[in-house]
Amino acid sequence: MKKYLVLLFMTLLSYGAFAQVTGEVNVLDRDVFYLHYTPETAISDDIDYQKWTTKVGLPPLRLGKLSLFNTLGLDRHQFEYNATTAALDTRNLETFYNANYSLFATYKLSDKWSLNTLLTPFAISNFKGDFSLDEVEFNGNLFLERTFYRRNGGYFQVGLGVGYMTLNGTTQLTPISQIKARLNEKWSFVLGLPNTYVKYDFHPSHSIKLLGDLNDFSARLNGSGSVLTGAEAENAVFTTISGGLEYNFWITKSFGLMAKGTYPVWGDYELRDGDNDTSFEFDTSFSQPFFSVGIKFNPIRSLQNSLKPL
Image (cartoon, rainbow, N blue to C red; front, side, top):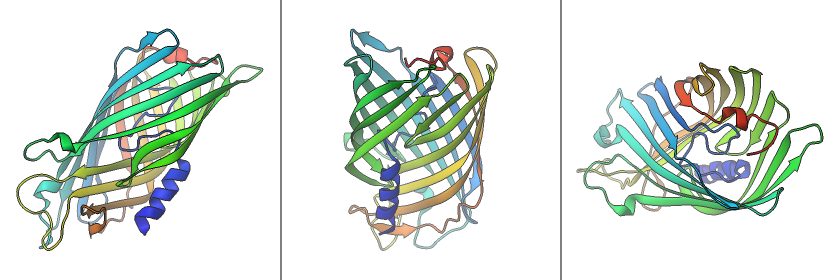
């Protein structure tokens, strides 16, 4: 019951997200490249967690009213177990990788309307043993977006549609909505999932975000031997919902540094069987904040910060 309540909560917030591919998904200031690192953080007395994540966007392809955007991403989730449990073999639970690709297509129906779709194949696994194409899964969405222009400059963008997404280990069709806004040269915001934030550009080289953050994956368990004695375990499911602050400093017009601190308001880490039922739940407290640092590259930042949508 708990995972369905969590799924419902995240679905009510969602808007065109593909939660298995988190990071800068639905933002007004998407970077062309970034590399982020979250150092080792205790999520319980017995488990430490750290993460590397990177994404790179390929040059967009424009065919008249149709624009295509391709992005490659890779996440590395690392767990260290400081205590042993007789029923649990953690050797295949130490490192998980998320290799993902996204194709976003937008078709301009008019100056105010656009039809958009997103296709996201991904593979999340410990990648122990032979890799199979069965491990590749898909998320995606289709939504219609309307732009509302403000008289004094700036804009709102509202989208409605349907998504096929994986959240907290459960994949299903769900209605989606999204709101993005550039209010003026300093203030902007996004409402949705996995990105919700309010951003203040208080200087051409400095900005700060008040944000909500989702870190979510469901990883296939491969490798020799059984992970869990006496029960079936096919997937490891890890989810945190956090809030916090992010600071960005741009060394040049295109190269920048990032520092972020978030505190989890809810978290879950468990093993599930082939029916997506819980086989083993880790005793996690998620009582420590997460800190992240990163580097980024964005040569079109000035265009993104303009009072007209791209």
